[in-house]
Image (cartoon, rainbow, N blue to C red; front, side, top):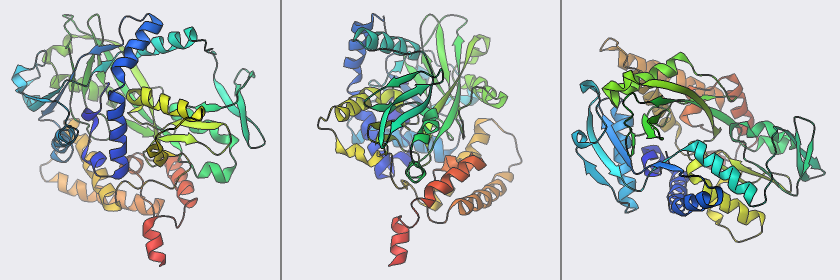
Length: 437
């Protein structure tokens, strides 16, 4: 999805840093038409975007605190930015034909948000880069080379050394593994990047018919909602799940596949007759505090450009230009200094808000999986999760609060990394400074 407003949540609008992320998405949107045309001209690729506009549906699946509130937050953001959108009668949406129990209650069309054929984009970037004189090396980076307090290049797993005057680590969820070049005190002051492993499917429609636009729900429990993105030649992209893990993963759990396959009922009843061509697994880069890492990283010549979670592809033309300007010593937007890699933990919500979100999203996953439980059980489950997640928060740190994903999904490796990161900034939060007065 090449989207901005479709990703908005109440949580995003509720903090200064969240609104900054939305501002970056909005600025990036304005660059994409030219960006796409230049890449097509420079690469010879036929098309990069394969969907025009986005339809957001609010259906009977999910929970009020997440789905309904998310739909309202999208409308709020669209209005604040004076971005065009149109309310739709769900029965008039072409291609959409869900089973009656998943029927949409509301819908809107955002004409300025599209869909990207990611393989075509990657091919275009590689071709355009090489035609511009760049060199692509087939190899995996093992470590950053240093001399004194200067990054001097990278060493590949093959043993080859690639010298460079500046090294930009944009390795997504694998970035933190390359920061061993930093002294321990410095490395501990950069939030570790963990993996938001996601599963999606490429589906070939039996009748060949695909939608003209992206069709999606608001963001759902811990993830980017159910969505369908048309590719070409009768193929659609169906996504997506999200599991936060300490290391990148390459497999798809049966439960994740069940969630996606079950979600087809919310889009078209006859999708069950279509064919799964490929199971896709990717790893979104998620810093421990949930916000991007953009800027210098503690050694001269070493830069980070990662941690964008679900926004990286959409923001890529904006962030690429931003970092290029900085590398060349040009003026740049200092607003992005808020996401400098060496920083105290960004606290985008209170501890109670984190706890409430963690519980609501956990309960929400049950309804998304169409669970069947006793009617009087949900309140008891809420109480149990409040106790469990409250205890986890207290065991991690009494001063800093991580994003809800780090509470619900955190294994011992993530909890250890959080404690190490928080220890590096002990006593620096506004609350602790107020307490010390």
